[in-house]
Amino acid sequence: SCHRMKICFHVPHFLFAAFLLISAFALSAQNGSASALEPARIAMLQEDYRTAAKEASKLYFLSSDSAVAEEALKLSISANLAIRNAGGKVSDSFSLRINKAAKRLLVLTAEETIYRSFELECGADFSVPSGTFTVGTKLAYPNYELNGQFYKFNRPGNTLGSRWLELRNAEGTPVSGIHGEAPQTAESEHLFFRLKNSDINEIFVLLSEGGTVLVM
Image 1 (cartoon, rainbow, N blue to C red):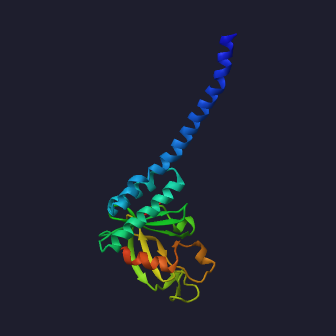
Image 2 (cartoon, rainbow, N blue to C red; image 1 turned 45 degrees about the vertical axis):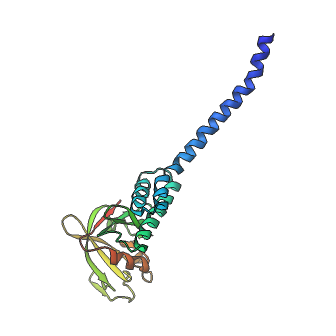
Image 3 (spheres, rainbow, N blue to C red; image 1 turned 180 degrees about the horizontal axis):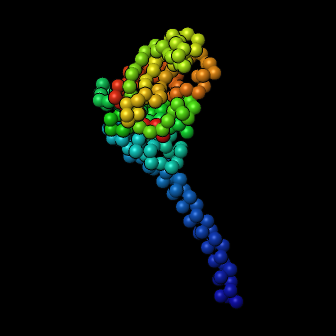
C-alpha cells in the first residue's frame, strides 16, 4: 500500500519534469537560431565591420530561418555602410546576385558580403534566363529598339527607364539586361529585370563592364 502511494505521488512530478524538458528544448532551438547572429553583432559592437559583414552574409546564405536571414541581411548592409561612413573603401569591385523567385537583387562586395539589397520585377522566362553573366554595354538615358522600331529615351514605347546594364552569356552574346522603370506599356510587363530608377542609378555606378551577375 505504501509502495503504491509512492508511485502515485511521483507520477505528477515526472510529468512536470518532462514538460520542463520539452519546453527547454523548444526554447533552446528558438534561441539557437537567434544566437547564430551573435558573432556578427559582437563584431559590430567592437567596430570590426568587415568581420561583421562576413559573418552576417555567411549566415544569410546558409540560414533556413527566414527571420534570421533577414536580420543577417540588414546586419551586413549596416556593417558595410559603417565602413563607408568611417571613410574606408568597402570594396574594389562589386557583383550582383539575382533571385528571381524572391524578386531580390543583391549587390555583393569582392569578399561576397552583402552591400545593398533591392526589389526587382522579372520579365518573361525567355528574357530573364538563369546562369552566370557578365555586364556588357552600360547606357545612361538609353534609347530602345524592338522589332525594328526605334524608341527614344523617355518617349512612349521606351520601357528602359534611366539606365541599362546589358547582360552577356559565356559566349559574349547579349541575352538580357537590367534597367529602370518607365511609364508602363504592354511590352514592359514582359521584358528583362526592372528596378526603380533610383535603384538602378546606384547600381550603375557600382558595377563595371565585365562585372559578374549570377541569376538564380
